[in-house]
Length: 208
Length: 117
Image 1 (cartoon, rainbow over the protein chains, first blue to last red):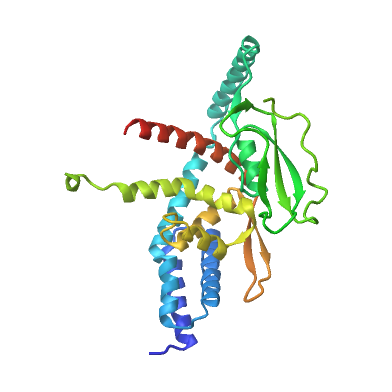
Image 2 (tube, rainbow over the protein chains, first blue to last red):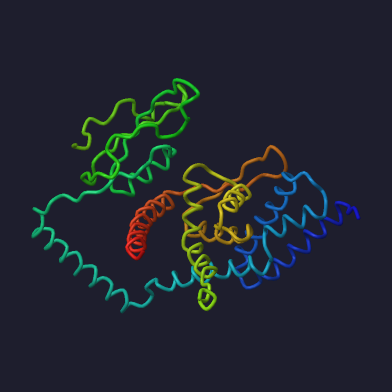
């Protein structure tokens, strides 16, 4: 049986009403945002699907999941948020204990820093960022304890993948001093290499 | 013999997903700003990451409240305006910390699993 767009809309409205009811315990602003996001999702999915059949719509709703499942995920997130929030210090005694603990830690750190200042520099391994986007490469290099130095290279032809790291200075798997610069090249269109990018490698490279 | 052992993999997968999915969202947004539908479809296409697309939206609401992402509206070529999600500086730092911790954790587990063979 063919359904009219009014019938299809009523299926969506029933789903959203069930969801709203399942989300009942959440703060109103969270509930509003989730309902609004799910409504947009259904609209986008219906538009991209192109089909106005009941089966296609039910498939979209099945992929979204049962309202109770979404509500359970939302409540899990709220519980997690409250647990994290409850770790905040509220009583004056807790604040005093925390301040004393911080002072003790700082004093001990200064003492140990003086004692072990001659210790060898720490080393780390350069992450494999070849083929990654330069935004991802920067995050990974920083996370590994190095400083990223991005050199932009205009693309010579379409065989070179755009916006991807095509060259990395250093040997993967070898250890290098943390805090050193890691030079890496990314290929962009000639106009893509704008003033924010470097054009030459950093001249304090990692010692080999 | 295997029939006598309880299969704990569904629960294990749920726990692993729960811990990692937030950072997968941050990693996707590290590449570029994305709108909700696009984000959930990308996550759903990654095998085993999302069981129901709808469960991503509560997560997005939470990480927005925590300041890891921010949102803005942009007109869509078809249909109503879209709410886009963008990684904040705090989100970028959280992702960098996770990438570091994840690499160490993965290497440790891999080492133990390979040694246990």
